[in-house]
Image (cartoon, rainbow, N blue to C red; front, side, top):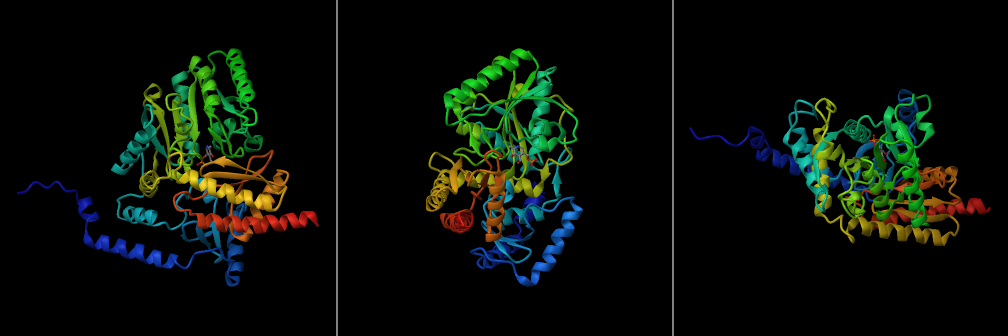
Length: 469
Ligand SMILES: Cc1ncc(COP(=O)(O)O)c(C=O)c1O
C-alpha cells in the first residue's frame, strides 16, 4: 500500500470541477461588473420598498442608519449598488473595512475557498491552518524593520483587540490600574474602552470602569512646544500617581478625532518617559493598519523597537493584538469562541499579502501616490471655491477636509449631500469637524478619484452658492 500524504481537503481543493466552478463564478461576476462604472440615482420603482425596509430596520436596531445605505450585495471596485438600485462611489468603505471595494475578485475567490471549508467560524478549541498563516504573516510583517513581536491573538472586532491589549497590560503591570491616552482619542465601545475613548457622549449612563488621564496630542503647527507640553504633562501624571499607570494608549494618527497624524520625535519623547516608568506602550492601529507608507503605522513613524503591544483591525477583516514576549499573558486571561470567521481570515491573508505585493507600501508606494493625487484634486476644488475647504489633512489612505468653518453641522451637511450625489464619505473630529475619506486602497484608481472630486466640486459649488445667496 502506498503511503498517503495528500490531505483529503487538498484533494477537494484540487478537484478540477472546483477550479472550473471558480473560473465560471469569477468570469460571471466580472461580466456583470462591467455594467457598474459610475454613480447613478435610485430606481423609482424600488424607492418605496427600500424606504420601508430602512424604516423597519431602524426600529429593530433602535436607531436609523446614518446614511440610507443597504447594499444590494453587488459592486465593482469602489462602486456599490444599493438595494434601491442606486450606485454610490464608496470612499468611506465601512470606515475603513472594505479596502478592496465591492465584489473584488480577490475576495470572491477567498469566498469560494471558504464555501468549501468545513466551518463558518474559528476560535478557542478548533482552528484551521489559515489562522496560523495569518498570525505568522502579521508577526513577520510587523517585525520587518526591528520590532520583536512574538505573539498575535486574533479576534472579531477592534474593540475586542483593544480590550485584550488592555488586559495584557494590566496583568503584566499589576497592581497599576490607570491608563494614559490622548485627548480626542477613540478606542472602542466596550465598558473599559468607553472610558479610554475621549468622548463623554459615548459613556452616558455607564459606570466608571478604569481611570484614564489624557495628554494633549501633537500639534503640527508647533511641534516643539506641543511635544514639551505633552511630555511635561506625562511627567506630572506619573509623579502624581507613581506606579499606577499600566499603559500609554496611542493612536499614531488620530482617526475619529479628525485625522491628525502624530510625529516620530513626539512619540519617542513620550515613550521614553513611559519606559522609564514601566508603562506598557500600546499602539491602536485599528484604523491606520495598512494605510500609511508601511503596513503598520508604528513602522512608518520608526517606533519599531518602542511599541510593546499593537492592535489592528478594519481593512484586515479580522482583528488582532500583537505583543512582545515581555507581555505574554497567563493562561485563562484571553480566549474566545470566535477569533474570526473563516471568510474573514481567508480574506485577511489575501488582502495583507496583496497590498504588500501590489506595492501599496514604501515612500512612493500606491498609498502615498493615491493620497497625493486625491489631495491635489480636493485642493483644486477648494481653490475654485475659496473659503469652502481647508486642508486636506491625513496621511496615506486616510484623507480629510474641513468644510467651511469646521462646524459639526457643516461637515454633516456635506457628508449627507455628497451621499445624495453619489459619493460616500463620513464625518470626523469635532472642533473643527471634518469630512473624511477612507478610500479602498486595494482597488481605487486615479479615475475613481477624479470622479469623486467631480462630485465634491458640484456639491461644494452648490453649497457655496446657497451660502453666498
Ligand atoms: C482607532 C480605533 N480603535 C478602535 C476602534 C474600534 O473598532 P471596532 O469598531 O471594530 O470595535 C476603532 C473603530 O473605529 C478605531 O478607529
